[in-house]
Length: 323
Image (tube, rainbow, N blue to C red; front, top):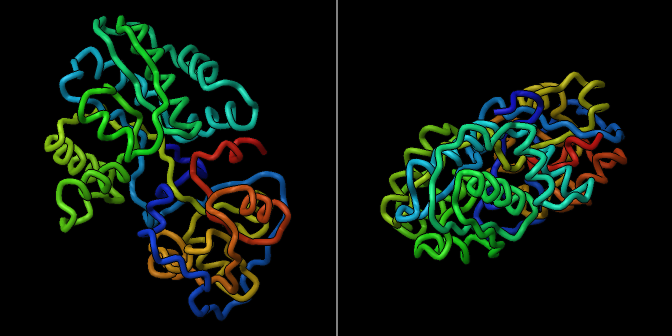
């Protein structure tokens, strides 16, 4: 996993269960001065050093009947080359620099020599992708590498998980770039809704549970990459430098207090992976909560203009490389 400032969090589903959308922050127990916002053009993610978030590492999900040792070896080569820093760069290339997913994928494959020494396979493979740019780019990477490995490949953008996962089970698509913790929780909901949440802050635990769930629905998995796309908490680089914060523990110990403004989606205060989790896991006490969006332009603009001190973003956001 990228050990720079890119640290953990969980896809928006991980903010907590849908439905409890409260808009008011819990009463603040902040007694310190806190850390007033600091404007700046570049953002940095604070390391989730106590593992509040689950392990949403990018992992190839494969229809078992379509699977082969050669196919898994090719996809594992992609996983071995991919970390969060590189995923941020891929997202920047597409979302900010406006390259196509296909071109960004080709450049990544070339830079990481992913087509060298592949075991040759054969047959028709359909790579599915979700309807957002990161998934589309990862799907293109999978597709181009599998083509180089000898497969006849079609890459197809399908929509959300509720659409593409049943197609993956049926074999209408062969492989999809997925996110370990979120997929494990999704499959648990299909297999045993009353069962224990299979996702964990430990990747090995999440993958063990995901593998067992996959067996029940005809899916197998390649190796999980170090790349994560999770909820994360960002500050401006200027804020981090001024107050000396690199981790969420630093934020809690140095910046709990009246002047600190936390920004995020309206439901953040009640969600276990957002403000509620910051309070329970880190004892972080913001002086004020500002209702904005989930890792979107409102939150990022509020950070850069010095309206909020810390905000919810996504750990693989291309904006984290754009400063």
